[in-house]
Image 1 (cartoon, rainbow, N blue to C red):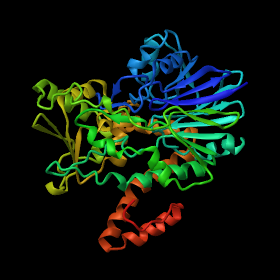
Image 2: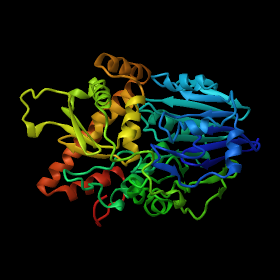
Image 3: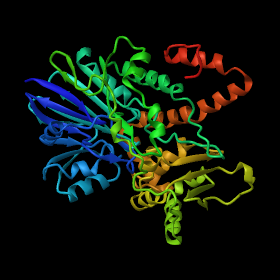
Image 4: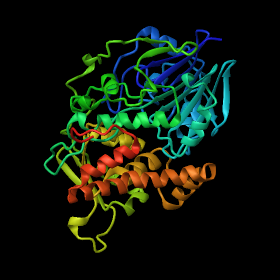
Length: 471
């Protein structure tokens, strides 16, 4: 049997057996997402869309709209077989079943045969994401999409060793813009910094993951979007391009494969489908999606916004207030009393956001969609989005429907029982990366020793050590 895979759209991967499309992942086929902020970097042709629709199975990694794209799914033939991670909440499965799809939940670390030569294994995780391992003949594809490894690196690494290295492929996000980074100061000035400042660090990080897993090839996937709203196109220069990856990849033993390709798994040959790598900028508009930044909420809508934020009880321990500024009108939602904390020490976040997108978020509960669109502006006051706000509100709350401390303990217990060491290492690793390292960086900067410490840290990680500015 002959096997190949093709990378399409944003995170879509199409796996073939003897020329027949067997499996399609995260099928975003057309249109936009994140309230009209993202469009496909290269829109699919009619022939590509038709081929995607012929697949026997579809896998949806998680609930972000560039992966669970409802308009695209609505065009698929009825009764198609949907494969899903075993997420904590059944919302995605229930919704797809209601839409007439044949849904199968892929249980944790279990192989499922799809055809005589193709089988898959899913690893769902605390991030409410899923990693898909695809065995096609004698090759292994690791579709990491947007997911962190969440304590599964040792298991995946052992699995990779069972295959010839040249037959192993990692497909993963390599991006700095696929999360909220539209941070502003008190006057509304952007704090994003120069576009190239953080690109190489992310590329090095992706290369480290590929090296640690022991794969033979890294294939660019899951980050092929372009910003098209007039209030989010400022973020386009922050996208990591194929030329950026070529310039900064530092693991020569691992082959890098450009986006939008067809790979023959028997020979390893690569056929580029868009060799010029030029984004389709004709999709950029002068509109702000369906939003009017001058609209203000009614009193009833303000009450809904407040009720929405108060639902996330877990975040109150780490956040004192949230401010929403909509159409020039601001409302502060106090989550904690002063408790002896001086006013200038209180921890808060201001979100400057248009009314329509905010109210849609309040209705459906997915705050991540606002953060990732990067048209909303965010001002941090004595706090950060990670590791508290974004995970607890956008992931644990919005996707897992976990809001209270007892619910959260049950949530953690589920993942601890599956993988105790991996769960603990993930929680500790998050604290180190998001709390301790930033504290050390700030302290080193105050003491004037940031550069030598960064040199030591980069050497420890195995990254290139550069002397030409920050990374």
